[in-house]
Length: 150
Image (tube, rainbow, N blue to C red; front, side, top):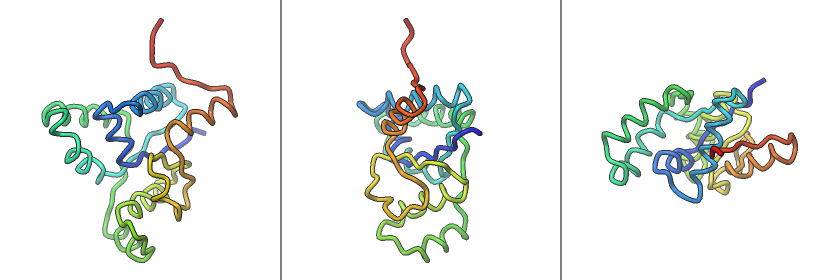
């Protein structure tokens, strides 16, 4: 069965802004997706957050084009009134992180990928960085992904 990876907003920022040293890991996740090893999931809300953070750096038109193209490989989970109610009941200090964790749970993610694991200490979905996830695949299953051609 294909592993479902839920991408926190910061991971999407790294991908769309090509932020180093984190961009390489996001590209490797994309390679894993292309090979059918993983499904990449994110919250619909993340697109507005990424736009707010990245548009000045990348340009609105280019970023919207990248968003459009990403819909070919990203599964997008909705945030609805039920999610917001449940997040309020959960009562985390950081409401945004709570919504991300809840959305990851709702889409049955196997792993929530973030660079801010401290924000997800209460998550019922296991949390790790993209780099940690890729290293685990290498150690446990002998799988690694290359983003450069010879």
